[in-house]
Amino acid sequence: MQQKRVNAVVISQAHEVSYQPHDMTWEETQALVKVERGGICGSDIHYFLHGRAGMSILKAPMVLGHELIGRVEYAPAGSGLAAGQPVAVNPSFPCRRCSLCHEGKANLCRAMRFMGSAQFFPHVNGGFAEYVAVQPEQCIPYDPQADPRAIAFAEPLAVCIHAVRQAGDLVGKKVLVTGAGPIGCLVIAAARAAGAAHITATDLSERCRSLALEMGADAAVDPRDEALTAGWASDGGVYDVSMEASGAPAAIASMVAYTRPGGTIIQLGMGVPEIAYPVGSLLVKELVLKGSFRFNGEFETAVRWLESKRIDPLPLLSAEMPMREAAPALALAADKGRAAKVQLTF
Ligand SMILES: [Zn+2]
Ligand SMILES: [Zn+2]
Image 1: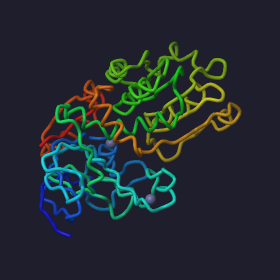
Image 2: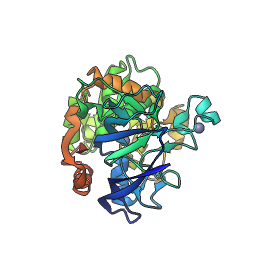
Image 3: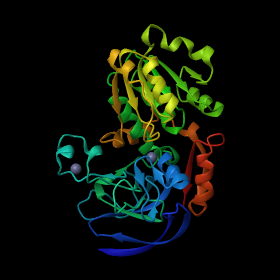
Image 4: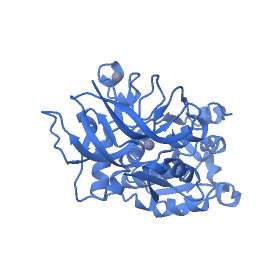
């Protein structure tokens, strides 16, 4: 085990963010990646604003960031990686020994080491830093001709491809997506790529609604506009599949009304810990309610889809800012009226 001093975006327990020297530990069996770019995720924003992301609460300072691309600086012998190679960094490192890992549900591993996450304690440092040390298998090489701004969307796109898979076969289906931030918009693109026949998006923000249309939605609606949503609950609900990406209590509850009997609801938005929920309607309509958390093999799929331009995420990229300006970049990313995805660069 070695230590290497690098500059990194550290969030304190009082959720103050600063760019400061940080001692990184590194083993020679790990690949060393020089980070070039990192996307700011909703969870980074939640830690920044509230000191917690869903059930994950900051209990110690942590380096933020898990949507990373960079270049291999050091490749361990036999790893198949080469120095200088551009890679997308898969931030998840499951134990690979537990029953969940063996069942192909490594995203649910209780010993998961996920970069930039306070889910478990001690927290796992993220990669908004000059360098990160990761297992070689966390490095997914990508075509050097590909646009690095697009490849940096691999992690959130992987989340969305996983969510779409949780929903089952979407071919010919009518899909509702609530919340058109970066995740909702990438769900729209992934659902479209998976064969959805018609996709409706909802968001309170006009800006988000126009991005939803750009990313492949057929319609984008303000959920407060009752004239537009009035018909959605008719005949027991009109959507085959509803994907909840806002975390807003009103949206979460409305899915039960808008999803047709026998349909499926996928919950991706973190939301608040407790909400009032129409359980009675859920049961009489035999709705399937499924959570969706992170991803498994979908990370590499996401890299390939971005490399081949099967999905173009660039309409979602609002700004690129240097890593040392992480605090104002986080504030910008948190302002849905002004920004969708913000990327930090070195
Ligand atoms: Zn993310
Ligand atoms: Zn495991």
